[in-house]
Every structure is written in structure tokens, then in C-alpha cells.
Amino acid sequence: MKIHTDIEQGSPEWLALRLRKATASEFASVLAKGQGKTRTAYMRRVIAETLTGKPVETYRNAHMDRGTEQEPLARFAYEAATDHELQRVAFIEHDSVRAGCSPDSLIVGKRRGLEVKCVIPTMQVETILAGEYPSEHKAQIQGSLWITGYETWDFCSYSPDMPPHLRTYIFTVERDEDYIRRLAAEVIVFLREVDEIIERLQRKAA
Image (cartoon, rainbow, N blue to C red; front, side, top):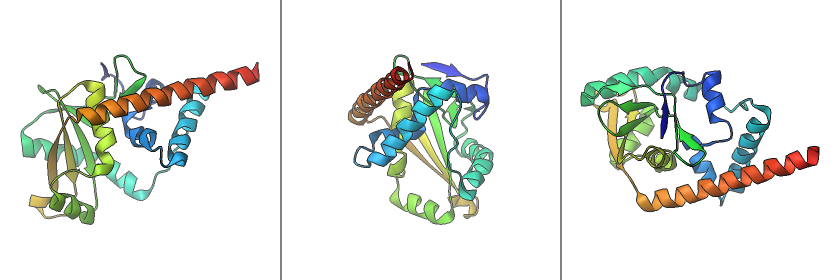
């Protein structure tokens, strides 16, 4: 893998690194074959960004913006709860597949990453009672484990409005090798389709 640490997530350089790549935050879309519109929409986005060299604007709402603002607090809470030191990174590229991930942090001195989700109290209650991590994040976290080759990844759910002892919930995710094999195969197929469509579009313009 190749780790980029000298740029900021969200910067033009970061966006350029992601062009024509499948990224872990969208691996659930890659797997969504039963929901063709989701997979197709993501594929068209990757194609459009590749052809234009510019990112396509994606939907954001107040909840997403609030989560971004609270991420530094969540990292601090995680460090306080675990005594781990965190390293910010911009993007990690897979060694051989045109794919990558943008972890919220890597844990210094360990082969482990961190995924942070800042959530409303009702979601925090649901997650804590379940005693695991929400399944909607499985593709992203297992995809990050695939890209990095790491054995574990910490999921941290943070809800600042909860009582202090319930604000930070941490769950360590283990590699699921069967799932990773299926995910890797689907990503490769997805990228092959991206390349075929781009080639077809270029032929039409010739």
C-alpha cells in the first residue's frame, strides 16, 4: 500500500488522488447489485470525474456537516479512552488495484486504523445496545482492511450529547476474509466496467 500523509483530506490534491479509483466510502455502492441505481450512479460519478478531472458535487446535509465538525472531539475522546496516539492520513492506495481509502486516522505503533462516526443520541443508544458496529459500515471498514492488509480496525461512535460514560463507543472489527475476497472481486469488476465505458465514450468522440 502507499500512504499519503502530506496533503489534507478534501483538498484538490486529495481529490486528484481519488480520480478513477474505487474508494472505501463507496464500496457499499459497488456491492449494491440488487439496487442498480446506486451502483450505476456511483459508476457514472467515477467516469465523469475521470473524464473531467474534477470532482462531482455530492449531497450533504446539516447532520453530515455537524459530524465533520465533531470529528476532532471524537478523536480526542478515542485517544483518552484507549491511550492510543492517532496519526492523520489523507489517502491509502492499494498495491495493485485502482482502489483506496481515506481513514479517519491510523493508530500509531499498531497495524490498525480508525473509523469515526459522530451520531445523534438515538443512534448511539441503538449501537451500544447492539454491542457491535452498524452493518452499513461493513463495506467501508472491511474494504479499508483489504486495502491496508491490517488485521483489525477500530470503529468509534461518538455522541457528545450523551452522558459522559456513553458518549464514546469503541468496537474492534476483525478481518472477514470471505467478505474481503468477494468485495475485492466486485471492485475489480466495477473498475473494469468503468474502463470499458470510458473507452466506448472516447471512441464515440473520435
